[in-house]
Length: 448
Image 1 (cartoon, rainbow, N blue to C red):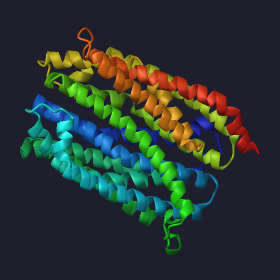
Image 2: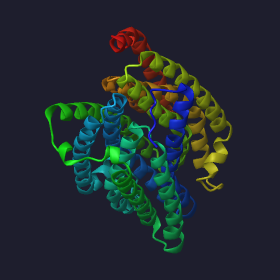
Image 3: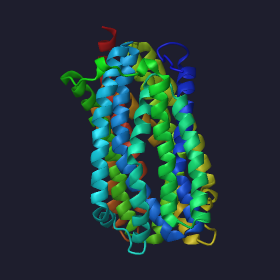
Image 4: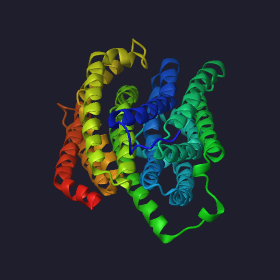
């Protein structure tokens, strides 16, 4: 099921590779969306606020692992494009060792520092007990999250995006069934939602691990690959560390914004919790297409096919802009109905706040869509540091503007919503002008 993205029709190959990734990550959103939906409808606003804040925190923590896996995946893709499978196997061993160590450290830190973290997020006192119940369970799943994302990145690097989708589909459906069962039948509250998510994560993480070890002999590591050398550690660490910084900075900025949102009370927290799920679900396909685009670029970069890379960029931009325009219109028009999926109709204040958020963010999805392409492009062309720069610009603008504008009484919470698309647009401009300035140099290095 491996795909060589260095040959064949560019648009068809990218879409065929991207669609399973898009479907897979949309399903992955169900892990927390299922919690949010069931909790919001049956456990009330305080429980919804707790799960929403927990989601932001978990997204930040797992983004560290995701960034490390994505960075390693770029290395794997380049080596696959170079047809160097021996080096790829050794790199996969080095990468697994390094990322597993980081996952272990994260697990220890979050269990020890749970209460200080909740305090830092400025969680209202009436929400704290719910959040503690949820986090005490959900943190157990970090190891499963590592396993899934690591082996999914390895498979996608060699053009196999279908198998990760299958495991996510099974676990997402399991998550929904267990959510309903644990909350409605067993009455386990928010802890039940967390238990459902951890079990589902375990199924996808352990399942995909067994699949790769059993069904993918070309990726299987042998005794000759089990060693650490300076060159491989340096290459994997550089890519993984910079991509990790990019992902964690992005989500740390969101976490800081979450703290500011929490200061406006439970109604704003609940609205933000529901609206962010819709927001993430809406632009997730563009994000996943950016990751698929990165694999396409990395394989062709390894194969030194500069003309194919340039044609791929033009095709990807057209696809992302078309998708984002369609989704922007849909979110703007149906914002209220989308909020009603998560919020009871009588919660009019929460719904109004959420609609306001969605209509501001939804108008500018083209900005975040192009930014995902820039992230993927620079990661694949051995410039992961530039992805970090763009993330710092986007998130730095968002955080600074959010705190400045929210402090103005006449603006208030609306300032938080407007700071997000402004950050996207500024980062896009920097990414475009950097590419324009470096384009000739990059392609000449491939052609020589």
